[in-house]
Length: 329
Image (cartoon, rainbow, N blue to C red; front, side):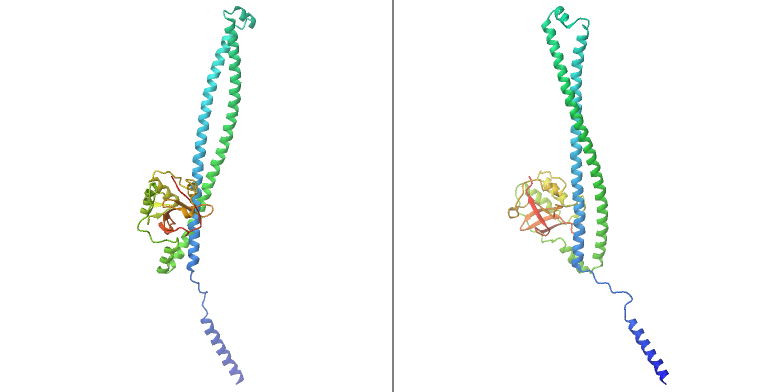
């Protein structure tokens, strides 16, 4: 009897254990992604990609300047060659004329010369030619050394920029992969939450009915505002897609002002303006080092090519880490 009770008890315990196990999930439940974390991640990845693109713009501008310098140095070398050749011809002619009378001593030549003063003048001229030639050769050697140093520096910098370009390309590929991952997370969110996230990512604001700009700035503001809703594409500068510095460059071009395709380079395009003195059309800059630019449109708002998820939009002046502002023109 006791043995039977033990068997029944063991069976009951076994059933309880099985029941308990059946209520334990096979794998831990995955927590839903926090929308704030997703927003922070997407913002960070978008900015990393934009910063890489802006550094690439800077590298390309540097390369253009270096190539222009090298072309100027080569032109200087060609002019120096022509000048030296002319002096060499003059000296050669003078030497030949003197060698024609090499059998007569210098004193004898003075004696037999119909015009001894003229002959002495010739010797003086030859001496001047020799001095000039020596000076020119010395200067030319110096210029050649300077040219070689500059050429080596240019070659080194060209290689450096090529390496930087390759590095940035790899970096951008990595960021693109991360962006794809972030977009996958966004796609898994409920539609309502996703729309709310996309609307809040860059601090987009209601577009004003009109912008009270004047002078050349009016043309720039009008162009930038007309692009609201266009796509953001890295390296683009229109017609229907822009990156941040591409938008401001094209906008101010409508006012006859040429700007470089680089946010950090545009920071040097005009006098610095205090935040309290901003006027529509002023360029405003963000992050340290500078890697984003927008255009002030008044009432504490800017228009800018925000990021690939938002495109060209109107946002608050302080929706990103503010650095400063300039007034082009």
